[in-house]
Length: 387
Image 1: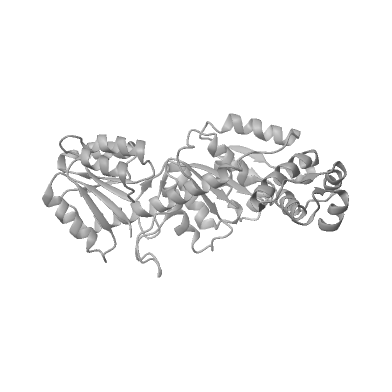
Image 2: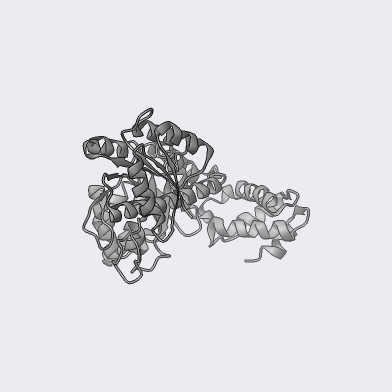
């Protein structure tokens, strides 16, 4: 059950808000604090999924509370509660990182929609943080070939900017790794990086996934839901396999890039978003444009910077480095003693035709770690790495 902290100095307002939140199908557990100082002490001691905070309070006002929350629990969304005279301050708090604000007296539907959306965003941020920690250990581009050195140089120059990047290359070459490295080295690295596999989402759902929807927009839309663009606000959205996106979704993405606005499916309300877009594809988008399957105007918006990731067959000199990197990592994951590869084994691996690229190489190394001897030999490679 989501846990909410309500920081509000007016007891009557606290009673109304608690009644609304706890009677909504008993969905929420609500704790209360009568002022900002009490609220901050509770935030330090306990974990909350959402904070509702009044702006004008004695001892510590809502702006100071927001600043403190962003330091100690930056992943927790904060919704400000504003009186009639506090609207300008409420808008300013959103620039400081507040999720949204609600006005007094609270409107039932507005309050519940804001709470649901904030909690949806919290789930996405927490999941993204978990993935970032998991992926962060792997965000290292292994290789010293000219092609990889050029990519590293481009990343160093482009990452600190907000320039959009289109990453191309065959499946399994590490396009996702390039995207993560761009984000980690950017000024947005403290913000979320939201990944969307456009090829894995049915065409009829891609718009809802990207832009969210309102209740009743379609048959299964039983509540308002924020989309990936909103979840990525202040950070980066990675559109993987962007060449598989439907034309209607492409049109909406184009608008988001042009105007920094999106609208949820079923709604005509504009939502401002501050998102850096990185896209990737294994398709020839210029050919897709000729065949009327991809919008040329969207291509030019996405391809401000082009990064082409080479096939593994085009960077064979990196294979020994990659094998040793994967061998050490896989041995640790499998809980076995580290294994080395003989020079002959490495040479033979360099001669293979790696149609599956780095992804295939990693699988072969894992097989050799499990099935090979204490030192992986050329014979092991011939026996267990058959193509």
